[in-house]
Image (cartoon, rainbow, N blue to C red; front, side, top):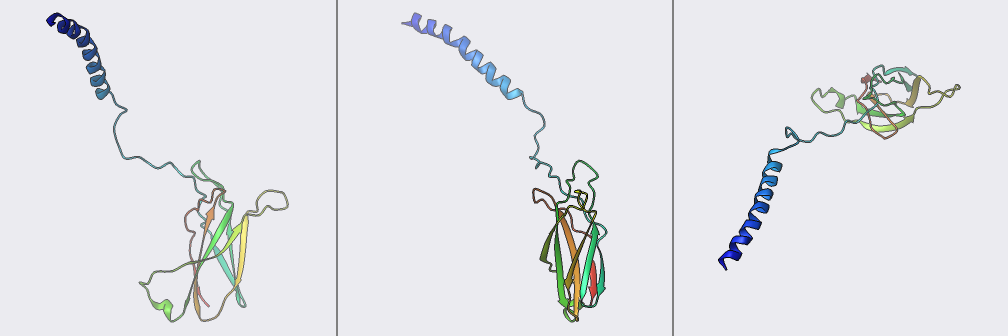
Length: 157
């Protein structure tokens, strides 16, 4: 009986040693320094920096140049979302109050006569006297990813 136990130990010990060695080796190996996961880079359209305006009678006309992509992390703009803040002149005096914007329109980039996209965009709307208006726009791409806010247009009419 003792011989059977000894024979079994002789057969089991090398297998046990091999398994221990494999487990120990796998614990020593690794994939490098551990760090929190990083989100994948999302390409977004470039920021509009030349938002301008003109007022004639009771309407405002916003205009801007469609920004060109300058690096691989930017995607071409396929449209623009226009935001407006409209406050009565009496409310507009609050310097520390947050500005609340409302989405007022979505303007797609249109193709010109040559088939290429136009180089600029114009948007017009009627305005009322006695209000402070602030406008901004954001470009977006085919995937709906929006870029950064444009410069602000701020005037009282």
